[in-house]
Image (cartoon, rainbow, N blue to C red; front, side, top):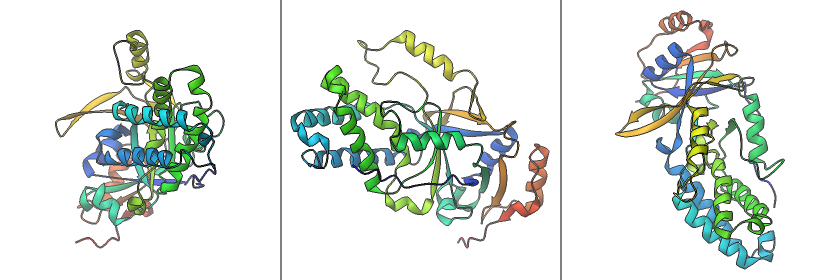
Length: 323
């Protein structure tokens, strides 16, 4: 089973497109927001990724290239259990999205307030280094394939169907060799879904490849749903919840307590990460959107007012022709 994960190099700078209002909040508070991806405008991508995983496994249950073909009945039962578990499973995944491109029309349209926003260049080469290595280990299935990621993950989004099929098939075959020996098929299927779930935010359809997206992803360590009465440990849940409602240091960032905001009559959980010391030079550039009324001089004074010194040469006007 070849690992088809596209080799990636950690960039020095990635770009976050946003509205002027969000830009104001980021700069004045020195924070970036990780929001629940399930309630973002990209929520359908998770369903796409799940479908790709399950269909590929189903189509290869008897493929001699995969170890699962040696136990077709067990593999079929495990897959059926996973299909049921994916319908019920819905845990919190928080993410902030970036692009490797500074002035991209599709990003202005989708995330930069239809051209009225700004694009913030943030330093990733040092700030996200640990999170990048952690993501590479997890997505590449290096080390223990049973370990869930702990902490921030930072990686570019993969737009290859073959990539997500390969990773999910590898997980399926690896866990199939030992999980059913220890627990029931139903519990083994639930554990496999729990292991695959953190992979999902890093894969999207080729239709979105122009976005050249990178993501910072965080998984709050809460008990895996569904929270059924006969299995839910309220004491363990409360203990882990305390970790999310207090500040904590994570890599170079300070994680602020979990909070909630309203979006289209829905509650959206989020955690802000503070990039104040030791991430003083986190903001590297600002690009003013093609329809945005801001001027470069005002942006420079605004940044310096909030202790973010920046050279005028790193404040850009968009070159995109936008009608």
